[in-house]
Length: 59
Image (tube, rainbow, N blue to C red; front, side, top):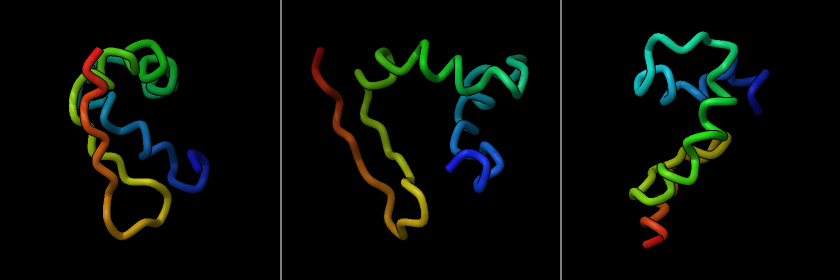
């Protein structure tokens, strides 16, 4: 979905790390995803109307 959404699906990384180059947002997400999964996440998938809440994994 990244091309369709013009990479807005990785936009959170811009707000967490504003100095990160735009092209690296996906790589940064992949690096910090395990740490982010330890927190409650609300993720908007595709064209869903309601976002999905992913409770913390408890690791």
